[in-house]
Image 1 (cartoon, rainbow, N blue to C red):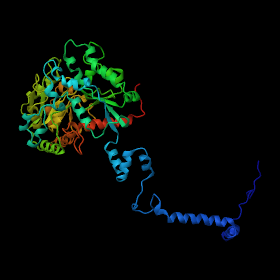
Image 2 (cartoon, rainbow, N blue to C red; image 1 turned 90 degrees about the vertical axis):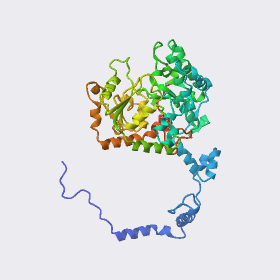
Image 3 (spheres, helix red, strand yellow; image 1 turned 45 degrees about the vertical axis):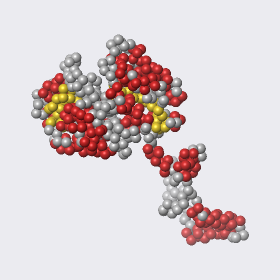
Image 4 (cartoon, rainbow, N blue to C red; image 1 turned 60 degrees about the horizontal axis):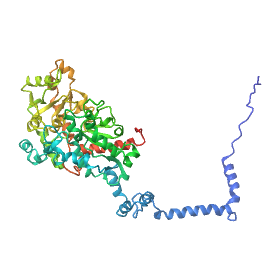
Amino acid sequence: MLPVSESPPYSKPKAPDILDRKQSYFTALKPYLSFHHRRTWFFLGILLLQLLLLLSAPSLPFSLSAGPASNPRPSPAVHNLTDNNPTAKEQVSNGGISSNRQINQECPNGKIYVYDLPAIFNAEIVKNCDNLNPWSSRCDALSNWGFGKRATAISRIVPKNVSGAWFWTDQFSLELIYHNRILNYRCRTLEPESAAAFYIPFYTGLAIERSLFTKNSTAEERDRHCKMMLNWVSDQPFFKKSHGWDHFITAGRISWDFRRSKDGEWGSSCIYMPKMRNITRLLIEKNPWDYFDVGVPYPTGFHPSSVADVRIWQDFVRSRQRRILFCFAGATRGFIKNDFRGILLNQCYSEPGSCRVVDCGGSKCANGSSSILETFLDSDFCLQPRGDSFTRRSIFDCMIAGSIPVFFWHRTAYFQYEWFLPGEPGSYSVFIDRNEVKNGTLIKGVLEKISKDKVKRMREKVIEYIPKIIYSNSNQGLEGIKDAFDVAVEGVLSRNKEQEGGYKWK
């Protein structure tokens, strides 16, 4: 045990007097402050050099002043940019890097290279338009780069100054519309080395149309064009480099038309072909669980050629007096047991003062009609059950008319067109579970409970999104407005950029 001590074993040293410390420091430094000591001259030299640097600051490539330099010089980054780039040198000589910044702002995610495919994959398919369909010619529908003939009959319904923006557009003409626009796209490049994405202008849906509806067509016939295209494109150096992950196509039919798993089943097996699996596919209906499927709006009949056309149309549908609560344009599917459309038609017919029906039996509503547009313009809501598949073109015909869609399946729109529709489904649409309707829920009762103020807000949201669901009749697009083509292509470029370095199928 340690002995107890009254004082600590170590005493705290006494702090020296401050004046004593100053005197001791001066005394220590005194030998070095003499002009006869070489260290004195060393310190003075350093001070003189710092003074010279401060005095010469205006000639350096930066300024200490708060405002811009009167004669700014290019930064080192500009020199690096222009060393081996004549175009960039010209941009710098014409006023710094502002021109280059403008180009980057227009194409922030890069540019697109369009393959020059053999004509058998596009032009020859259209040239054979009389024989694409076993029942009738497709030449009118595919004319005018997929817009079809002008819809002169609609002129009595729409404002005169936008009547020229309406066409009888076929819902399966997507491939022609995208091909024409992308050839004139502002972010197109003719140099594949500088491309961020590669477009394959293969008319995927048109290529299989005849064999889809020919009774005795074989699986080989339905797959022939796609196989040939994939063999051609997979031989290209930039496809080999990326295994196709930065390539994309348009397919103007629903995804299920290209997903045949057995020879005896419907459609082509194009999507299931190994060389296709990394290629992004723009389709009018996607498989929601396939990353490389992207759902894009069906082509409708409205193709404005200017921003003014869009604004005139939005003002027209906004101010339209709507006398009908809801409507349904369609027909029953007699071959489907307990057809849900039949239930909707029965409810509509039982409420003639609140609901209007446009009977689309047969082909009466093919590519739209003036009676459909007029009905949508007169209705607050439009019923949108699933079509032959989960989606239908009528969704977009309805919304372009400023009518609020009523959905019964989430996959009809919410899981399909995320790039093009508002993120909050309730802001622009009504959802009624189909099973509730089957069990007796009256659609009229549900819709009547929605306040007039809310209906007005929902309609305004629909009108706001009209530009994103149309394909403009302008090769350069609409200045300051993104249409469905712009949204789709920019989405592909953005996805490619995000996907760099990520996992790709080999």
